[in-house]
Length: 271
Image 1 (tube, rainbow, N blue to C red):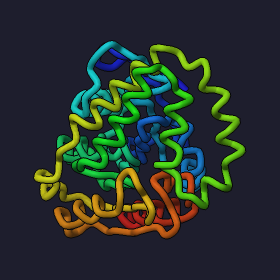
Image 2: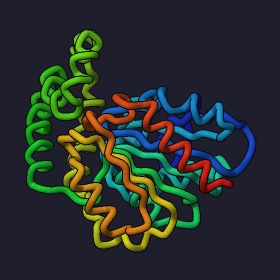
Image 3: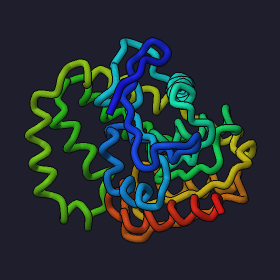
């Protein structure tokens, strides 16, 4: 657990698994998440002998929250600087949602760093429905009521079956949101704005030549299967898996499936 100043901002990161080497599996968070969000994946990759890097983007829970600079190009610059400072030259990127867009942009900008790219519940462009959903969340953020925001987000990102199973946990989590710091709310608002304004990479996708794995929950409402299909059309060599009975949070809802697919994919490339 450590922080490092890159591009003038303190970025929180964690290194796990194999301590040596200049190659790492890099996990990239969803927008409301933090490094702990990969807790169901990290042990599997550590046990398999991989070096693992996690970090919170600027504006996320453990990293600094500056007044500006929330764009995907800045996230990519932060990530590259972090890799360079840690001596990591090759990566297997495993990303979800917002982190998937960062991963796409990084793979396009710095292909020499990327041995493989896994995108879980992601997209390369947005549509009207996505804009309307995010606009409704932004309205609640402006009110400063993170509890209302949480209640609006939950039914969109989780499948019904999973939601029923974790309802008690979510009710407990609600209690933690009543005193959310203002700086976190403002940073989250900036990240949401970037998600809407900075996502249009479809035309550039054919430039991705590394191995690609696309994973999407069957019932994902935020980034539906059609978005993964669109990416597959632009990257024909990509492997594509739809996970049954799953919403937008496949890494939580079906961790065993994600781990089997992602670890198998990375291991196959490293043979």
